[in-house]
Image (cartoon, rainbow, N blue to C red):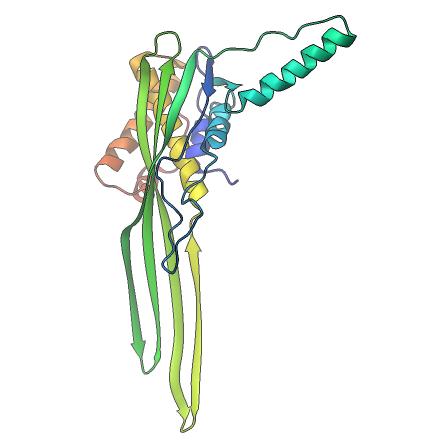
Length: 264
């Protein structure tokens, strides 16, 4: 999967004072929506059902792997079953050398895909003259994810964020339909469409949520950057972009003003 600008920012974050031991049990799709289709009812889901796998990958890469120690919990039954097989085999044939204990998590990462709104903006334009013309149309969908960090020892929610990502679809089409002779008609059509994959949008929304979670936790003193100056630069850059987005600036406009997101 191609790296997004937000994903690169998360990967290049300055390291923390101490890595956090975290676990992801699930990251479900709570939208309940099927894939949109104007002609018939779809059974396929509108958004990915592999949210936990994507989130685990994003967390494992944060700060080039220095921010989080992610322990396996999404499919912990498989892990426990394999450990049982190993221990039983060792007991039977090698004298019972036991495996080291499983690493536990001090923080749970909870959340879900909470919204997928289709056709939030639609539009288009076209023109035809003497049977020759073209038109284009566009559509905007929005995917929303919620993420929170929960302390295992106290159950307190350390930080909670909600982020959105826009999914764009564009279609351009042209053609001609006209008489070229009394009994001859010229007719042709051509066009193309571009649909941003939903999984890219969902992943980028998760990447932004992880970035926001790290920044807000650092601001609240839940964790800290090893390099205070580099961490402060990350926080300031994030807040500038957040304020512009809150004022209605598009990601493209923010990119033009500040350039691609930087880690410091």
